[in-house]
Length: 112
Image 1 (tube, rainbow, N blue to C red):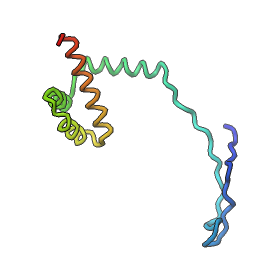
Image 2 (image 1 turned 30 degrees about the vertical axis):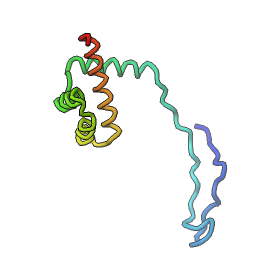
Image 3 (image 1 turned 120 degrees about the vertical axis):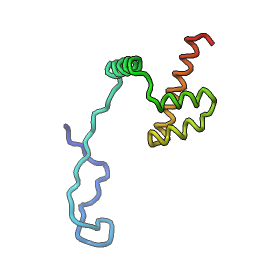
Image 4 (image 1 turned 180 degrees about the vertical axis):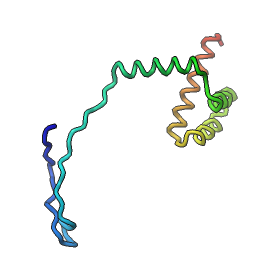
């Protein structure tokens, strides 16, 4: 790892209570560049493994209930139920989107 210099490093702190360099004297630790995670073959493997698991194990009972709510066009109720089960609204939206895509795929396969 190469040393990275901070552009506007603050002055070293003195023992003063007020002013620009107030506070306990400390040394500035330079920030280092972290590696980025690039999408590649690993994500393709993950999606394949997830699809195989979904095919073998099927859906959880709460997922079946959500799908039933979506079929009866009760999207808001489905989101509220999913949020209660998963904890956050973002996870809830993703799960509802995933299950509605599954329902659409099932409709395509049956020929509706």
